[in-house]
Image (cartoon, rainbow, N blue to C red; front, side, top):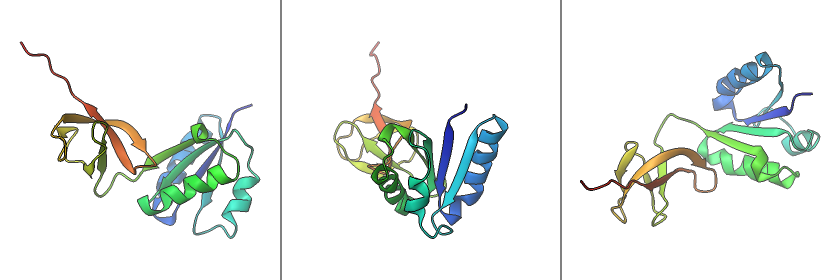
Length: 141
């Protein structure tokens, strides 16, 4: 039996959510899409989903943390929740050295605060609403 995937989304990301749902179903998986604006009692509907299901959140930045907290409140674990941020608009990077959050200008750049050369990873932190950025160490020749 394949694992259930629950997609939590808002109206602005509904197309992305449907595209992902179609991919999951074509791969033989089970998928439920719950939309923030369309569901009367989102918490109740989410609580009726099987625990251990994979949660995928496609939402505007303002809603991500609320949807994540909702999933945690009804019993899902952090490891079951994946956040896929909207790729349009300004992106943020979280410096792993000084914890400064700044606009992501390119993949590798100098932190505005500590001036360490850092590189943005593919890991998005729902807590910081930013991509984690790690130091780039270059060898001197």
